[in-house]
Amino acid sequence: MKILFLNGPNLNLLGQRQPEIYGTTTLADIEAAVRAQAEGRAEIEFRQTNDEGKLVTWIQDAASTADVAVINAAGYTHTSVALRDAIAASDVPVIEIHLSNIHAREEFRHTSLIAPVCEGQICGFGPNSYVLGLEAALSLKSAE
Ligand code: CA2
Image 1 (tube, rainbow, N blue to C red):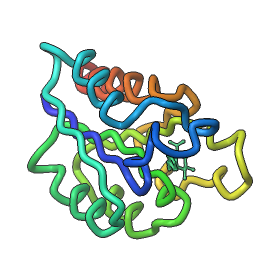
Image 2 (tube, rainbow, N blue to C red):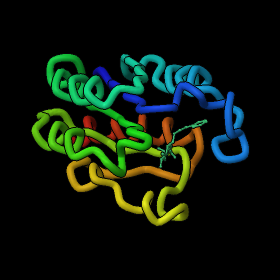
Image 3 (cartoon, rainbow, N blue to C red):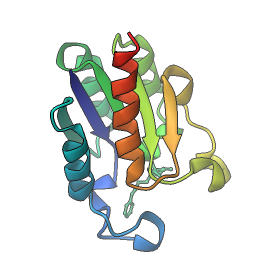
């Protein structure tokens, strides 16, 4: 069982900028927590890019590289028709995650263009959203 974690723009800055909004945990810390929780249960691949096209290509390729994808599309969540189209066309189930509760923030963050084509959405639990995303991915496969 292989789970692909994809991270969008600026998430490489986690723990280094704006800690009052996004906390002090780095993306590397989050990756370590996900790997620890997945130990003996799933193989994890964890990637980050600032490039929208790269996220689209990774989703397109996910069918041959993973059983489930978990994505924090960051700012592209609210803007990217291309990412939504890629997820809609993919044979791999995709779970949307966010650190913050996007529904409790600015109005423009309330809309996720990818939510309707994802299996479900987890948001608002800080770094733990990633661990919950892992559990959701595992439960999807065990339910098959
Ligand atoms: O809450 C989330 O996980 C978001 O996906 C984070 C995105 C934001 O645009 C979404 O609305 C919600 C922002 C990621 C940028 O992260 C930064 C971290 C540190 C410093 C600056 C940006």
